Amino acid sequence: MKQILKKFSTLIILVVLVVIFSVASPNFLRINNILNVLRQVAVIGILSAGMTYVIISGGMDLTVGAYLGLSGVAVAQMISGGMVAPLAIILTMLIMTVIGVITGALIVGLDVSAIVITLGMMTVVRGLAYIFSGGLPVYDIPDAIVFLGQGYVAGIPVPVIIMLIIVVLAGLILKYSYFGRYIYAIGGNVEAAKLAGVSVNKIVISLYGISAFLASIAGIVLTGRISSGAPASGTGTEMDVVTAAVIGGISVNGGKGSMLGAFLGAVIIGVLSNGLTIMNIGEYYQQVVKGLVLILAVAFDVLANKEKVKKVKEA
Image (cartoon, rainbow, N blue to C red; front, top):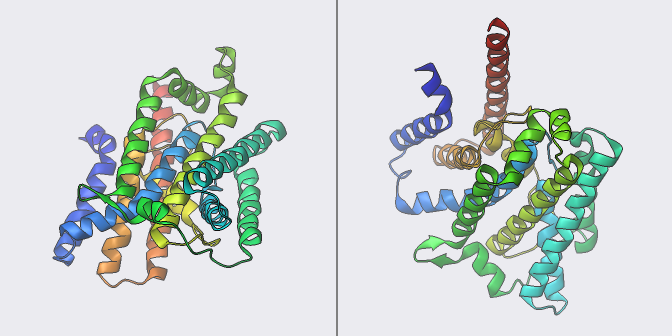
């Protein structure tokens, strides 16, 4: 029973939350509300895919929230300047990826904690978003971008479709490719990975590039959803993404976790926010709840690792 609870803890938490909010409000399980939850989860779900790679490798990327703001401003400014939407999207993705690669290179080159570097880059990226936009949202978003954030295909929100495609592809790569195995190896024991011939530095740098690339997609989707490129977009989102990953069973120490777990963690964050809102619980209280959830998830992960180490020593 203990092993079952540990293995399916994320799913159990999700089911319990759904039951509680369904009892508290009959509107919670309505199709429109479920689609609304999934649409709200889409941005966090896309970001969680990149964050999962980074955390499993033993790193951390606190820049993802700022990427949302800069991505939205960049694509909106390019389009307002006369550039066609497809080219603006491609250039935005390229710019964000380059920034992510630079972040990874700084972490590897300076051999400094990823938290410190990404915290600094978060401030830099957010500042660039305000500089390029003049501190004001950029409007006149074309229908092609709006469709990515507000459109439907066969009754399913486009952001949800984009999220599911990214999560599935990222999950398959993580589970079945050599690249995915190298990520686990680096997070499990970086020195052993080096001795095994893994190009640790190159992979670590690429992971931050991938995280930034996926964040640019999430930023463009968010821009379409709110019909503007707002420099303040994504403020604080990095904590929701980290919370989703940790709740989903991604070990903060690296080397453990799955893409499915991170996705379920993102859904839990969405369900939690939506359910608390339906119950008329204010945003400030929601922040307290999310913070406590993150602390509990980290505490559970730490205690589980201690128990594992204890068993190994006893054996």
